Length: 193
Image 1 (tube, one colour):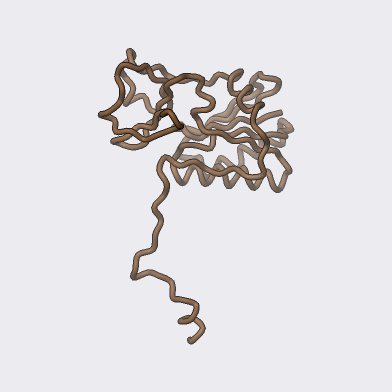
Image 2: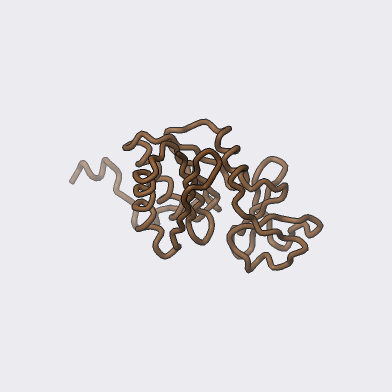
């Protein structure tokens, strides 16, 4: 059986899928995702004899995507479960997918893949399939809400190779740096003490 996980919306959704049909669905609310996610995945693996995990690996928020991929990579290594991951736009089955990146930008599908664009530059002649935040997409002329299409999701993941490790795709690459006053001493300095 397969476990499909979509962590990019407000809540994490999990579907147990067998032969293209949903056997179980669960949702982990945002306020509990860090604690509840590993436990729920383990429960589903044991209860449904999961042998493959399909996961949308982004784009998503830094902390959530790190927790999801780290948890799944651990289960893969410990329980010998096959992993398959993809970008959200690969499963949306619409020519113009859109996600909110931040207060000023959207992620849309460009000619060469996903790109960030300023919200004010969105092509209003197109109809977009949105996901995760209704507040930005109230104009029904330009926006259609995405809903899970299990047949398309199953076909997409069936065509992907299994991997040993999933890597998260972030909304924007994190900028993690050390301030100059908190830098680590060099090895030479440490060895003199």
